[in-house]
Image (cartoon, rainbow, N blue to C red; front, side, top):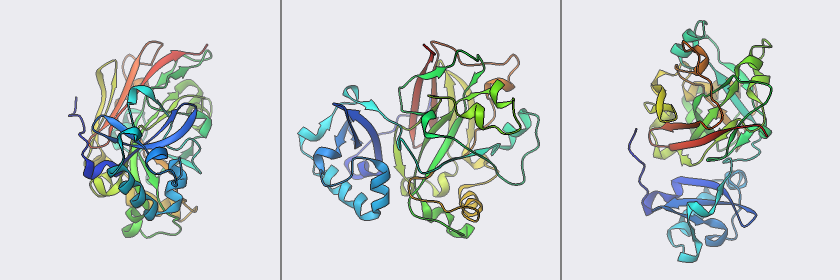
Length: 301
């Protein structure tokens, strides 16, 4: 397992979480094993990440100052919160398929020459520690570890060399997929949009805290502690700057848009025999420098 990520006061604003406490949705900054609740430390700021991003860099600077000077009454224990998807209802959730050559090949396809793009809906999203639901109508629930970029400012017709300027930060995603439903159609959307299957978070990490384009980061999935996927973001077919350029020539990217960048080889359906997630399992996604996203798997009630 990769080393744990340590927080210091100088970098706390580079990490943000979305959570619920006392029935209210909030955002906060992890520091020294606690979370600075920005609704207490900076009550004039928004209480959700999307609105904070829409306000621009000045709002981030205000949050940073507030977090660094927060009093003890603004500190909460992670044990006393419920993590939410980083952005519960993003403007767009844009997913990229087969962005690692080895994954394309293990699935019997040639690596694509243009990104394979599909959407997720907000009703599929869950937060860190929330259960991924195995529906009654399928037993083919697969895991997919993915790096995710979050857009920080409006982008249209962006040149590749400027693409990274539009990424506010990065996080983790588990693009859990019902493989039998994915295969019912030439379009993948239905298998990717079951309720409570898209784990998203827990921490937003500012882009300037990571290598340019989040390149060269180790990415893993672990099912019940066993490593299933183990690769590196340097293996992308379409790196982040190229994705921003290609997407923005077709659509306007907006603050809070989520780009889920594809999964490496090692998924369950391609194994012999196949491995699918079941009730009682725990699936972890980890990317170097970003953290761990962990979710139990639970049968639909």
